[in-house]
Figure (tube, rainbow, N blue to C red):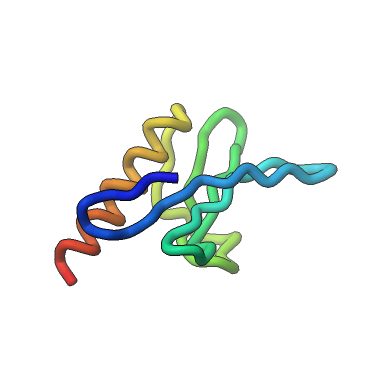
Length: 79
């Protein structure tokens, strides 16, 4: 879990299923999207029920997590 100076609490929660793997992105206690692995590229799908349109993609999972965190911070600072 990561707390930042823009007061958002961001967590990345592994979800393992029988046929798939993903990471839920949890912001302030609510699932706000998820990350999945598509052939070696990690994709972030913004929105709790969004399985169609991805927002960001990276080959490195940690880089994608950092990008999501930076986006959350920027959105919080603009509010």
